[in-house]
Length: 315
Image 1 (cartoon, rainbow, N blue to C red):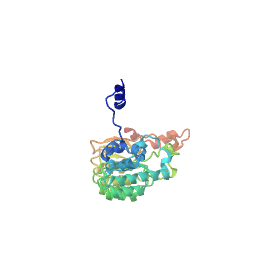
Image 2: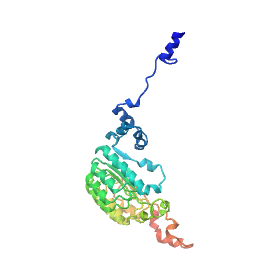
Image 3: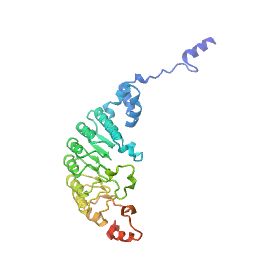
Image 4: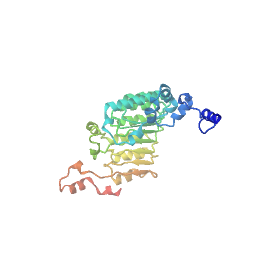
């Protein structure tokens, strides 16, 4: 009886042996890096990086930083006024700079919002392998940093500069001239027909800075981006002439988003795209909110005649 009790104490209750205690501190660097690679960027920043110095160092391994993608954070949350503040921009800039350094020139994709010229220029100088750049809603990104992207990141194949109002058609020209692999361009604008959805979130002065000359951008796209396959220009103010230039210059175009392009009619679209047989077009939605025109009680019929021409409904 005493011998059996002694064995149980030595070997563990109800078993013949004891399980060895696991010690995370004994993990090799390769093993820890493999585990960390299964986490998202946000998960690593909010968890393992705060555990200890060795884990922090493991989180900076270049193999974990082939991309900088914080878009899921924005995509799952409603737009917040806090995102448009200088303090939030500094945090995004700091994260981007850190990942660029840790990547050791191996970064191939950047998907973020609310960064600035300084951080983007820093990335351009150190990311020659960059292929995907998505920087939506960056109010302080201008032609200065985009020029550096054009000259240093020539492998670019996908670019999203939606809601970046300080970027002009000149950047599109430079990108087109220097990035021959570009296949996807997203240059969407905010809904200027009904900006009430942005009130209290996006600064008013920024809303008022919406690019006006859609044809200049259309000319740059049509002339310098001949290999485009996917183009989004929601709420652009381009005319039928601008659309024609795009369709004539981008003969490989397969998808074109014209949502909110109220200067275009169904006839304009049909005529401009007649030479593109495999093109899928998302056509404009011509709903014009009453708040835009402040119509009087009986003025809506006059507005109907002036704003909606009969050929519009051939869409």
